[in-house]
Image (tube, rainbow, N blue to C red; front, side, top):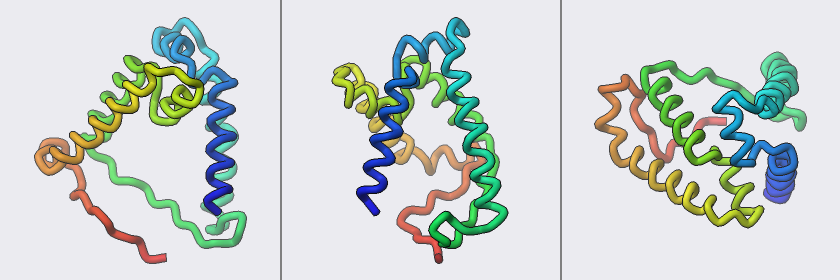
Length: 149
């Protein structure tokens, strides 16, 4: 099954690369409202994904027949703060997590700085999470829990 994931990830990265969704100039153009191609790509992703999620939720099983349950995540003030920080980082770096790896695969050395920043930011967030829980009404952090299947 791991090979399937590697192939799907490679195909996804190829599509991101060829569509321009990992290109710094396209991403900057999207945030500056001067290029609208990425809005179309994102919209196409939503339109193509929504029916699949609807079918999964309706039938409660994956294509292979395994049971699946999609739970809604709790809403809290942290979602807004996190979304704003994510958007700022995406705009400044010109890439979000997926395109970081696409850019590295394309040989763009500056993407290594974005990867380092993402890793440091995630580590810092984990280190100060307990202090942010009360401020942003965040749920308690649960590490290493496995869900019953």
